[in-house]
Amino acid sequence: MFPIDTSLFLWLNATPDSPAWMLKLAMFASQQLPGLIVAGTFGALVVAPRDVRRGVWRVLLAMAMAWVLARLGQHLLALPRPFALELGKQWIEHGNSAGFPSTHASVAFAFGAAVAISCRRAIVALLALSAAGLIAWSRICLGLHFPSDVVAGLLVGLFCALVSKSILQPRLLAGHAT
Image 1 (spheres, rainbow, N blue to C red):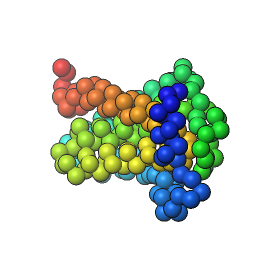
Image 2 (cartoon, helix red, strand yellow):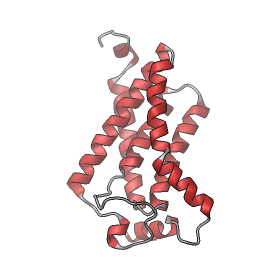
Image 3 (tube, rainbow, N blue to C red):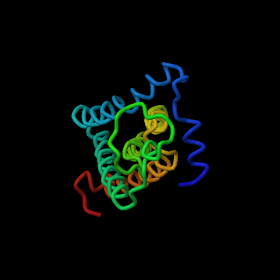
């Protein structure tokens, strides 16, 4: 544990004096937004034009790889969450599993980065990356992760987005061998 990690966590973790709107936003970002992202991504796979579906497959692959890598990292490193060390305030129930890297942040940043890589519209990329950042912040705000957990999740997500792009090149998706 880095001393700056604890200081940043305590600064970003909500307190009983935090505004109610901030807690509601953090709870939405942690509890509902990830499900909306997954549902929206699968929905895009069904209704989007063929050329867009190619990018959606990249996004889904990146998210799946990020989930697996984050869970593997938690199993191998087994670093505690802040509440396990009696730091800060935990705002939602969570098991006392390892927290490094954050699975929520890993999958969210895999989504955001893969959308940014695959999408031609800057506003869509910005929205996807902003949603990922909001999810990552919420995990610290609610007392579930240290900042290093979400930074590691960001790196896992970026890595998975880049790998999914290299695996699912447009020529491969169109049925052409490379």
